[in-house]
Length: 326
Image (cartoon, rainbow, N blue to C red; front, side, top):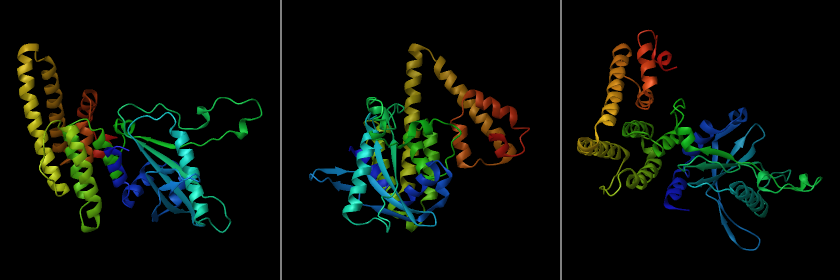
């Protein structure tokens, strides 16, 4: 596990992050029966019968339904595609069940609890590996199919989620994905502003520190070769990062001017024109409906030229912001 995966493990050691993952990303109506107040972190490290250590990343349990059945969540954090991830989750599920038997933590009926394996993938390329064990096994002779192991896992491909303009930014996990795969410095600023608001209050101090640690790990990627002073809270981080982005954009502008003198300024003109259109559309919307909420401002910052033209055409006829951005 690299340092990036380690800080992910730190973030998902907080029940609020796991709660937002369950509420925002799990498919199916059955999730409405989850008792989210019962979330409890479990042991995620197991030793097999031959004494070899195997380590999962995070295991939680949560009561489900009226009978207080348990659903165990096994989370694996990946930054590169693992073709045999489905097999790994099958092994981890077996180790989890084995550990529950060993510690005599089964219910009165002595049946094994269901397990939901979840893979959070944060790589640049989209996931292409199987999400089930069965495709990894050669076809058996006829009649032996039922003896072959099988299990699926829930894949959450962060990059695919963040690339979808219509996905709502309404919880901490979605905010993390947007920061991981942001498309502009303004998008980073908007998400950080939301995090400062969502994580205010003394009860969120530990989670704020975890997000701050995640930001420290991401800064070298956002600003290669630069150094930063120590950051002590999210508000300070927000101000420092947004200021640094402004400085970076100014440097990039100067470099662009110098390169433009040698290679032409066509691309710079096109970018400037798009930003000018974006600023104009923003002024039209604010003149009609007032200040934009942070989430809608993020949508506008990521809008393409055709989307900006569509918004400009509709701004006079739309009856509300929801109608405009529908």
